[in-house]
Image 1: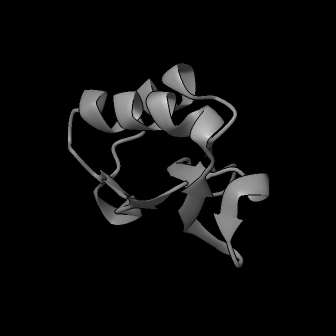
Image 2: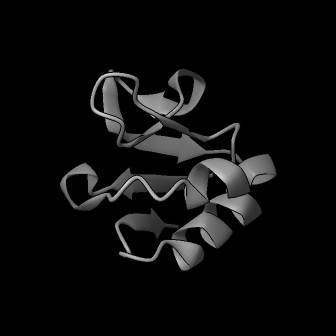
Image 3: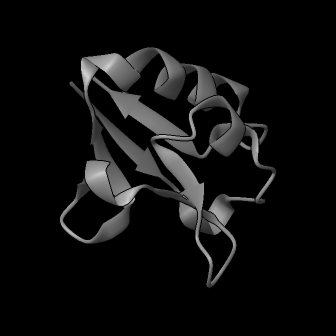
Length: 75
């Protein structure tokens, strides 16, 4: 399992993470920024989540493809 953090203030809503890893990332309907989907969130914080091994590859790819590098993955 890896911890994922999104710097939501820096998000530009480019959709890259939602398209690459739609089970883990989604668009917030209120502010249109990226957030972690509810099943993987830490508490009720849309900016933090735990990615299980099954999601690790796509979460890392989403972080690598983010044009503003606001997705951080920690082992």
